[in-house]
Image 1 (cartoon, rainbow, N blue to C red):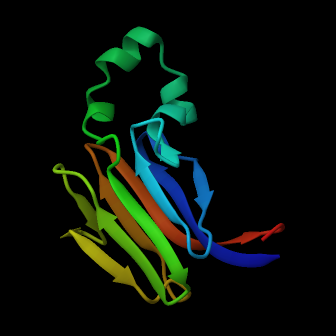
Image 2: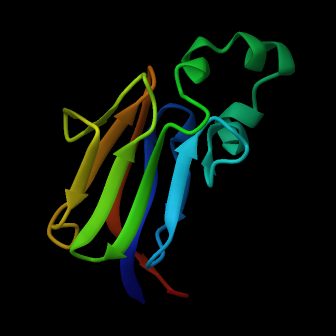
Image 3: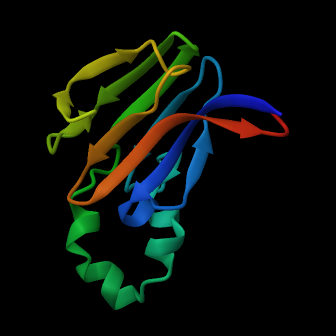
Length: 127
């Protein structure tokens, strides 16, 4: 097994969802189906009835393309806000931030009314 940087939902609609990062690839996170890590494709959102989806206020606070994550290498992972609603990394509102210590510690990304995703190293068999 190899440990690789992974986005893991820990609160909100993304809770329980995960997406492994790949070298040189930019991942977009948001509500739009065009996003790589999409709120509308999450199990929690799909479990709602169409009426509940339509009136889900928390989901509407997540922009279509809310933020992006680019992994250049283990010492250079960039998180860039794309939303007027803001993105917070480890409690600080950011425009863009470079993560250089992912192998030592996890980082929390908050966005929308209730979404929290952890950027962390996780073991994957097929990495």
